[in-house]
Length: 219
Image (tube, rainbow, N blue to C red; front, side, top):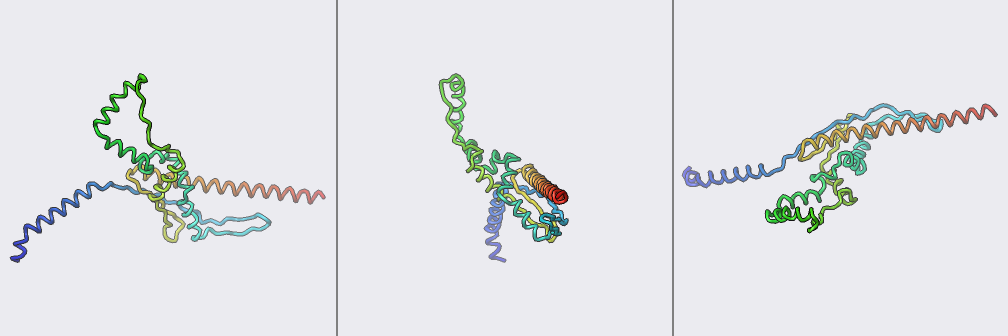
């Protein structure tokens, strides 16, 4: 106890320093928000009638991995990015993020000089400095945005069910919710288009087959 009493001040100071440092570190952390949506794959059977063959193909649980790969593919990610115009979001576009950081850290003298030049630029006595930012629609920028998008995305099957959970993390809760909802909507749209294409193909095959049978009967 005598040793503890002698070192009590050191212990108290150490605890206070650690607490203050931890608090400052927590305050500097950027909050992140995660939104999720659940997609349910219909486990119904598909009937294939092409080439005079009809087979029942059940939507087995193992095929869920195919849907997961589709949701995490770069092509699907680019559709979401294009729909939400995320290429112009500094959270995903590193060029815009660097431009924002430079602008926020620009010296006061440089800002005053830029403002003072505005009247001269307006009457043509001075020219505006060219922007160093890259074209947000450049292929390289789109690839970088896609990489950043996929790092924020997590897609997992829900156990042994036919459900897939799509979770997206962002520093903005609105962005996280918009991405999760848009991914679910685009996935549903894609599935409807695929089913419509399959139905159209089956109808075309049946029509062609009926024409062949009609010609055979007329012979």
